[in-house]
Length: 179
Image (cartoon, rainbow, N blue to C red; front, top):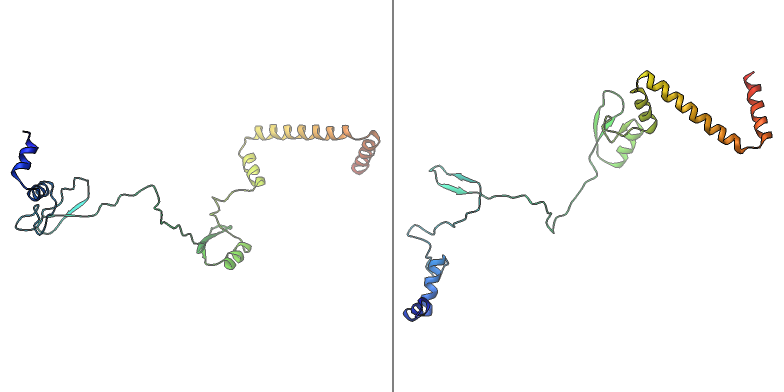
């Protein structure tokens, strides 16, 4: 006779359910088998959680908030267009707040922009000027010479596609203007 059959012969099904509840910490009927005279025991929660102590040194469990990288299904991302910050393009760069589209349009016309001036993208001409000025004098001269050679080659290619009479007319006009 194994232990389970022996246990079944000693106790009724109701008594076995009560014993299981007592060992597993479940409440059966009006009694709480986990508790004592002073009340129920605390849950044996082995997860790490922040705690704090009250004035008598007893531990008070506090909630543990764990951030998730996934957004919940009921999350609604509400982005408001206004208010916005704008900056003046003249130095010192004054920062202002606009509250609607008409004020933003008015400020854009009067010399404000939506990005801080050092963060704003440069137009290609200003960017090329800054890059050219960052070169040494020798590199600037070499680059200017290469650009002039390239420009001459493009003009020569265009002149090669034209008729000889048209080229002669174009060159005589240039000679007369320069004289």
